[in-house]
Image (tube, rainbow, N blue to C red; front, side):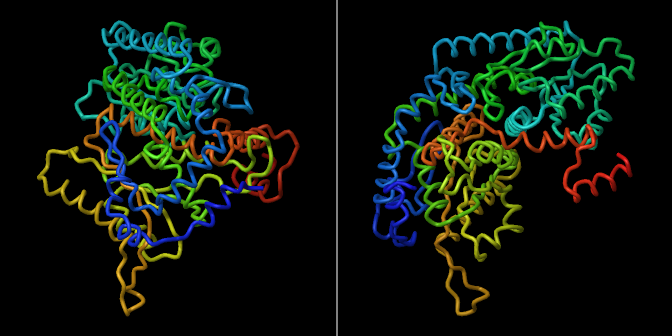
Length: 501
């Protein structure tokens, strides 16, 4: 059964947002939190003093302080797999031995980058980075957010097994100029290795006699990479205790560090470390990841919201919703508690989103007048990412701010078709600039927020067994060992591959 604290939270009075602002003239100051060049405006959520107090009591009941300490000191907090979750050690916070090991592996990565830049290994100007899940989403998102357009290396990140994703890259790239980077934690990922073999075949067809000499492997299983054929001097390991969706801080970030410069990677780590410190040291009422998680749980458990929308009012952050989908839904999409008992609360909301102002002309109709209550998260950057007339960026920011205001205020009309109910919540994250340090802090915020949500739900955010079942069935279909699946699936297979396949 859910605890008395949850019952108290669910019984909180549902006060309209406009009334909360009227009651508390200091609301913006109290719920406007700032860290590492990011302003977090939580004032347009339904959190008030009573709700915050109730959630703080729940956090104490769930022993949040001890669990944060366990996470950030490298204790085996991933209980179902019996290991730690040490992504923060990559940023300098954690078990001293793990921090030292991460630093050593970062230096190994830096040394290989320096060797590549000398041209000793080849005259590379193009990079194909192959991975899937966190091994691709993180690097791809980072590169899009931070690239300036005048980099020495052209980087293409490919994840999909669909040949239509890889073939255009091979058509555009030159085999002799291409460095192939294979990112796989286990170095057994079927989609990634199939794509890797396709790239090696393309290199051979272009006359490259030793295509493996143009390969770098990023993995937590270095022996497996060597056995596959990668020279051990070009294998960049990372710790087994770093999960895939948390791995961009490790050697998985190699391609971005090479393409954009190692100093960019160092700034990324430094920004994340600032958020780690804030998360570790700040009381819950001013702790940004914790307060954001309180709002998440309020809307999921009290208001029954099944989704959360994220809109980046900056083209450079266009891949952030995709990145957050994996981070939050793979982490907290669970149905049992740490004890293996059925979860009686709602788990992670469905995360979706897009880019402003495009989304305003697509999905915002539902947000303003639909029957679903959808908490919205806006991200914007004060410093523009372009050199066009300032009217472009001014218009972008004004649209962002206006949408949050309109969702909250609504607009009454005697014409029901033109009536806007209002009282719809949003959070705005306003970045001073979009650089590696600020982006590092932003991503660490989302990681810690995801962890706090898991603690409040009493679930394990660090395993992902649900990902495995579909893979197992795909392997069973490919094996064609006579063990049939359901009639519908067998019919689809027959239509796609022909009878007897």
